Amino acid sequence: MHALISVSDKTGILEFSRELHALGIKLLSTGGTAKLLADNGLPVTEVADHTGFPEMLDGRVKTLHPKIHGGLLARRDLPEHIAAIKAHGIETIDLLIVNLYPFEATVAKAGCTLEDAIENIDIGGPAMVRSAAKNWKDVGVLTDASQYAGVLAELKTAGKLSDTTKFALSVAAFNRISQYDGAISDYLSRIQADGSHALFPAQSNGRFVKLQDLRYGENPHQKAAFYRDLYPAPGSLVTAVQLQGKELSYNNIADADAAWECVKSFSEPACVIVKHANPCGVAVGADSLEAYSKAFKTDPTSAFGGIIALNRTVDAASAQEMAKQFVEVLMAPAYTPEALDIFKAKANVRVLQIDLPAQLGKVGNTDWQNGRNAVDVKRIGSGLLMQTADNHELVLSDLKVVTKAQPTPAQMQDLLFAWKVAKYVKSNAIVFCANGMTMGVGAGQMSRLDSARIASIKAEHASLSLKGTAVASDAFFPFRDGLDVVVNAGATCVIQPGGSMRDAEVIAAADEHGVVMVFTGVRHFRH
Image (tube, helix red, strand yellow):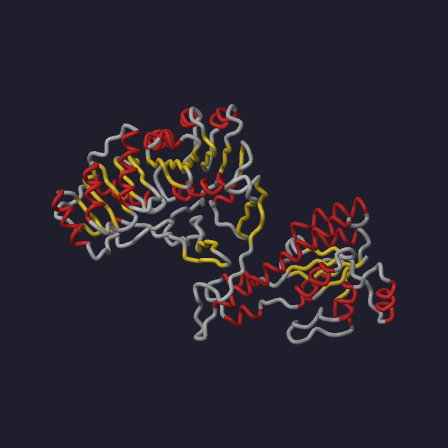
């Protein structure tokens, strides 16, 4: 057997090559890899010696040769193929171990030039991988160091690789080439005539890895599967470890994402309860127990069969309270052993642990480092909408008080809390809050007035008073009637984007009511 080894990332390659040599497999290699093997006492044939043709053009041409591709592509079951390669002195190659020039890592570096990017586009590597992967019945192709151990174990046990293994390696190889080519296309498609980089490429190449098939989609007659990014952001839902419970459903995952993204936005201990992708209870507290208890009070009816997310460790006390309710999914960064013991009695509850980024919210972090998507997408008929994700975070200095009445420090905190929640509520969104908890949530209505009325009804059903509350509206009030509704319900301070041609009318109405109104200057539609 012959193995051709040509790797840019040399992790584990020396140890792997030693094992191959010990199995009697002849080693063929290129450039720096050949030197590494030879310097460590392994018998290795340089590709240039094998082909009889020297490397040239700064190494751009070395493996692009009939003795390489003939050795990879020749079918062992076709006598005419075997006769052809023998006639030309070509030996078969049975194993190909290749990883590619680090294009993705190169373009991710600050200050990467087009010249740097182009130089890190591998040509010979992908060509060899394609050849080997196409002829998978005869050639095992390895494209990642994680494959070394399994291949070695099979070679030692069986003396060869099974067809099943070789086909799986072939699929992995073509996937890797797809990822590589997609990354090149993404990068080059962004480059404009003046050398600048467009935010959105001329061609978008989505590449995702399937995590699992799902029983069905939103409804039983729909099929579904769950995929993740190639490089998931730390602390994102796809990094979750399921500790117990039934398989996650399509709706579980969608709702869990809504809850997790919302709870991650709080620095203090927080709890978010979601039903049908809308927060129905959000609160902060001294610990997980207090946060959950407050969040549950907002709308116990909707919380039934909901999704609960916390951004702190779940201990026994908070677990005991949550276990009293019907919960579909529970998410947190950690659980005490006692908390997990409590949920063992609720075997169907899906308990997920998601490690939050170690430096979550650190100044200078990218959205990705904070566990957030950089771009959001929405599928439409035969197309795709793409936008930068709504990662805007409001700070106190952004607010503009537009009324005669001025907010107290407590009101300002309630306003900021209400605004943070409203960002995650489906528009039209109206959110009443007080003392670090939601008091009434109105979501997803065609009319902002109806959202306000629903929020009031929810508060009434939960026996919560809206007197003295802060209210957030995700978009401006186009008429004063929306303001009248929330003030009549009990709100004494209002936060909204502003920007309506009738802002003056709405501000005058606020002054007439004697309530505080602040503008954020930013809208948070969430359709």
